[in-house]
Image 1: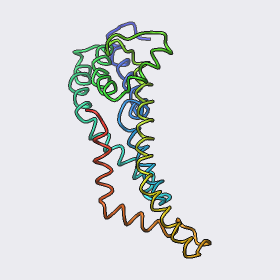
Image 2: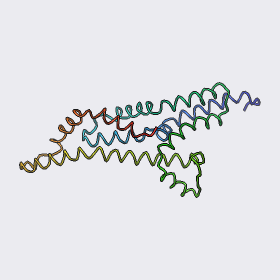
Image 3: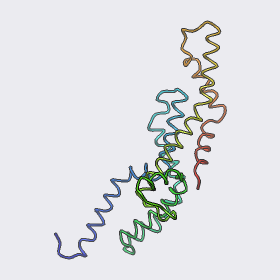
Length: 214
């Protein structure tokens, strides 16, 4: 152990940086728009009935780049006002963390539902007079709970038109006496055709992006 505190600063900074890098995937999932996006895209693939098309890597990549698109201004704010001052020695680690969490907290508070925040306030036995009073340990799970709920709501809406197509195809096959033919085999091309002709991917992405209150 070094006796000079100044020599320990670079080591502590390196340790902090490695810790942040190791937690980056979890932070990406917990504190950004990624959760709602990937859940909605997975529901879309399931509703289409295309099994593993598009592959998981494609859906995750699309959700990741959409997250970067939505969170771009926030990431820029964090880089300019927290990461750079800290790397240049103009800000302590505690100050950098507080400054970096500020835009994330503003984003999460805008997306979180009041009822979810009230739930965790009740579970913690505390009351929050202003948004600034909400601790991270209550705001983050409230935000994630809201993202899960909204992702499943989007999934429900996505399923409705495809269920209608499955019901129509099943009724037609039954009326024709072709009960041994799986309806999914016939409805799948029609669902894909309807999705493509209606500009499904563009409409889906636009609708997903507009669900975020920025």
